[in-house]
Image (cartoon, rainbow, N blue to C red; front, side, top):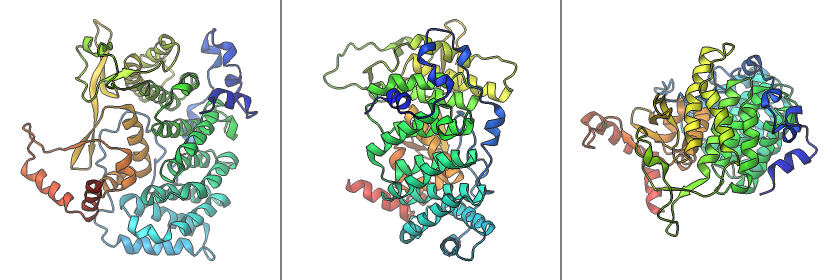
Length: 479
């Protein structure tokens, strides 16, 4: 993998004054290099793309996904296949269409493919639909049409998992990120590019290329794409970068540079940027530990044993392989400051999010064997942070334990793409979702003895009888 910092700072690309002076100012106070990102820019970059997807760019960095049991307004819509077919036909017949008509058709397409797993219904129209969506992105007739088209591309690729989508969509999405006059469109295009990279056949080389592109955006505070200090674009780049790095097994040689870039974003004036950067840092520290192998020393130090408050860690023992960053104490001081920040200029909501998220992030940096925690608390005698492993409710059928940062990052990304349709895609056997979030589930109605109660058993039986769910289980058995 090429040197990230050298590529970013010697490539001739635009960088911010803060980024350009980073190396010279490392030994001095970081106060002078704080970003000027403002809450106003964050609000402006988070307008919903359409009525149905209101809030799809909301602050998913906050550790607040306690349930994915969102109300599905399409649950009783038995005629959705026909409605989707009609909308597809309407989208493909553009000659006599209007901007408002395309906005509505794209919004309906997003609604139907979000709340229904429509792989069979889309199978014969993928190429034509992608071409139609790309035309809306290129023309940018209105912000709503463009962002709806970018959402439609995401839903198309996560439903179909067509490995030709990336090569066809990447030029259009990259151009939109660089050239669009709208920060909202740029942020939406960054997310769409990330989804196509993961699910559209980019391969490892494509993933690494996009990670470098995103780091350029982050290190320059958005200036490299002419979105200087736009929090929405920086957050999108941080979130997508984190999603992409979960696909990379070995990141040792680039961890130092990446952590440094993310540390600079901890000084941002936007809490969303700070939290997204902190999660990326926690993910990189977690990646510096891997499961113990047969030839590893048996007496490897395990600091978990001394933490009486921490819940028991399950799974294989994790061994440190390398230093994620050369100056962890400096990083810990920054994280501790954010975990206890009491600045009066920060809103109560942002302050609460900073406290809860950075307490969890700090816990992982101090001990990368520990993943995300919720209900974080501090022991007053030892000043240790502790809490329970994050557990998320999936639909009405089960619970998902998010005990590693890579699972949290992937869940947050999938949740942003599918919103209230996540449970539908999960239980209907969407391969893209299942392959990217291989976690165990247990029935909510399961008794302490491990036996599901009668009510939950009926639901589980109904779920197993689903055509797509059965097909997915059969394919697993053949592997």
